[in-house]
Length: 167
Image (cartoon, rainbow, N blue to C red):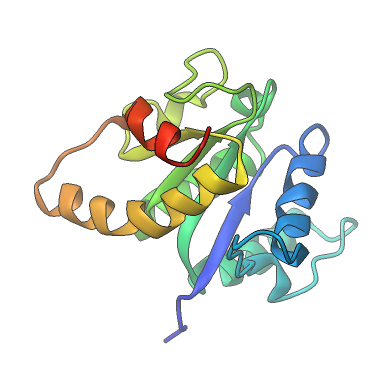
């Protein structure tokens, strides 16, 4: 049984990788308390590998994860080969999902959010270290509570949470 302490991040690798790299930089920055125990550090996946081999590596990473972050950019909803598959796997595994809007919205962005996620249990936040950190700290317990109550649908944090974080 895998020890689930990692954060799995899915994104459009062609368009949004710089946001993922910024999240990695936040962890390295001494001026932030952003805790990013990255599942992508588990194994190396070669871009020239077969789709089956890539998915096997991604599955192993997700098996060791306790939270699923989806970076939602302009083209995310059109990513069917891996992003959709990753979302399906996260849903199947019951991982708490944090949808991070790269366009700045603090709730679900219907124009960008993949259809498969729109009515599923996930919290939608804006792209910011403090806000993502807050969601990583609070959403897993909320997700567990909402799952027990059989609730679903998109969630978001009230404006007061953003204000308390100085955003």
